[in-house]
Every structure is written in structure tokens, then in C-alpha cells.
Image (cartoon, rainbow, N blue to C red; front, side):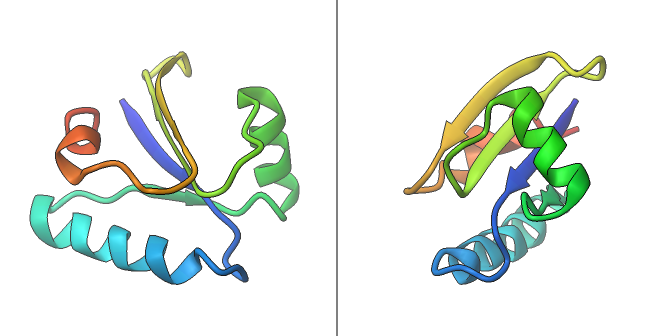
Length: 86
């Protein structure tokens, strides 16, 4: 299972996401992958999973099937996301 956050690093929500990721890692000992939609790979990822709102958090199975999708703010609770992080 993979959990990823898609957000623009140069945006008004970047600090909130940065703090969330740090708190998540501190509380769970696990990390969430980051994707920047302004990169070539990030833009392709956003097209594939229809990500149009930032920040978005996606939980994907090992074979890439979408399990859960949180769009925009407020960010989900850490316990909601930690369920999908392995």
C-alpha cells in the first residue's frame, strides 16, 4: 500500500502540508510520499488519478488501484491516513 500527498510546494497550503507530514512521521514512524504536480511525472500522476485539487492525499494498493482519496482542506486525521500506510 502506498500513500501519497500531491501539493504545490510554492503555495499557500505548503506550510500546512509540511507540518502535517512532519507530525505524521513523528507520531507513526512512517512517511508519506510527496508529489509535486508542477513536475513532468507529477503532472502525469495527476492526469492518471484525476487530481485537480491541492493538497490531495491518495491511498493506492500495491498494484496502483485507488483505495481512498482525500481532496483539499482540511487535511484528514492522521488516524484515517495511518490505516493505509504500511
